[in-house]
Length: 212
Ligand code: AMP
Image (cartoon, rainbow, N blue to C red; front, side, top):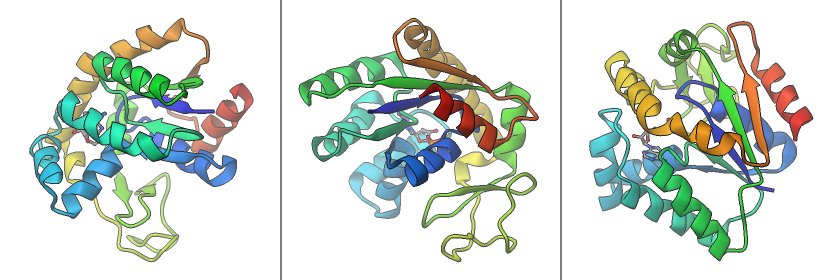
């Protein structure tokens, strides 16, 4: 089974993916993580991605879908698609790529979070550059301040989590990605999770497991 996670930046897609991977044997397909790896490795592709990511803008579809197609050649089952697709065009290309590989998206999980909560979550977010796990300075503190529980790496703030970049990212989500909810909502396998201020990551996970 392949699962797609749909939701705004800060909606908890990465945290949900982490739980599904750890407990249910899924593998992650996060375009953001793949792009950050290209940037860290200073590849030409990374240099191209950084031009957009550093400003909070979407990387063009041709570049993004090249990365996705390459990844899918060797992995196309038990995947969690996190942060992909972000445009209708990407959704259609992804479907075509999967059909060629005799695979498909079985479930689309939409995590629906009010915008004021998104800002709070992103502004307090810290991530481990090594294992990619996210923390929050209030709601998900590491055991030792500023240090990853899993591997002892110093936590960092993502450069695109700065307030001015977040504004651009949320606009890109509203304009380009939110229309995907309409595209998927009447298709089989659509799961709508409402996450409000009091919902914990564990509750979201439990609801998702029930729906799956
Ligand atoms: P994420 O880690 O999913 O929050 O993505 C961080 C940034 O990477 C985004 O703001 C975009 O600049 C870029 N990015 C990640 N996935 C995509 C995608 N599917 N299409 C275009 N840009 C993407």
